[in-house]
Picture 1 (cartoon, helix red, strand yellow):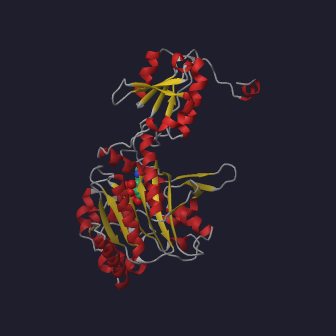
Picture 2 (spheres, rainbow, N blue to C red):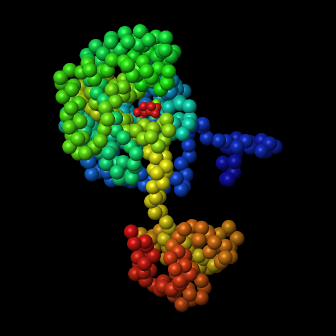
Picture 3 (cartoon, rainbow, N blue to C red):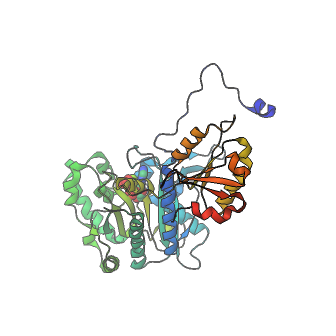
Length: 445
Ligand code: ATP
Ligand code: MG
């Protein structure tokens, strides 16, 4: 540390051992080798989005609190109890760590007038924050990938989004994912259903829990979403929103179903599927697995034709979904899908520091030819014994060891030793023309 830096660094009491700091509960570090799965998944998503002509957006993690309160609805789990909201100490602004991606995306679309030239197909990936009870598949910082289509009102884009998600499960090798569909109709239809629903729930008020009672007049539809087993039979017998849909809503729903049928995408209708945010109308859907216990919903979405207007934009229809990355990865693990092959091609064994310069130049050439190469690094006092270097080479999983021994180097050569198939087989290659033999070190992928 420089003198100047030392002077400006607060003094830490040396007497007691510094207390170990740990991360925030429910917020996880994603480390190797797990991070490789994340990168692989993100790569698959990018490639698939490109094939569907969806373009990437990268939005702020912090948004004005009012955006979520207005956008998601005040009587929702997220706004009532899950948001990380705070006041900016410097200017008093009310801010929130985004609990989901749609509201911010819509804010951005309106702010930049993105629909001016017509509809847009967009996607995002990134962390979301909700203060929930951490458990398997439920974290306080988690990650979503979302796809949104804005400016198109037809059922064909609802179906396209579902086909996209369905394709993604195929690309990722997911089995045991089922699709549930419902239609929430339009506000007027919901209004008529709401009155019937409240009457039904009031008639069974003895079995309603506290939360349901509280929501009875503010957001009764959400009561249908309850996970309370004691309320299941009442909720199952409740009037179905589907029975209140008018002709146009039914036609929209039927058109979505017809496209799914034509593309052999299986689904079931769940009349109680309502979703957590207030902004949905018409089509709503969830992809669910039974392999992850109670956190089985891996992806959810639907149409939200009134949200853009609600956050101050010119009215325009929209539809989208978001998937939970942790849950999808957990499902891949559960199914024992083979890990993408991240194996290293080369581990460089460097017996003497004198060989470092040549070795590092060779590795640079190999890397520029697409070979992955890890250099043995010493402790600061020499390179370590050959035995310990070979041990590290084996542990690295590399397919070949390059041994930069003094004798070979003197002849302008490097030894190439196989560490896997036919382990021990050794040959030498010329240092003069590395690019020429580089390809022999790569897997045949
Ligand atoms: P749940 O009913 O499980 O709480 P949700 O309806 O709140 O889910 P959405 O807001 O629809 O979830 O978010 C889309 C997806 O994001 C979910 O289907 C899920 O896969 C994932 N997800 C939501 N909350 C969490 C969380 N706290 N931890 C991990 N993943 C989450
Ligand atoms: Mg939730």
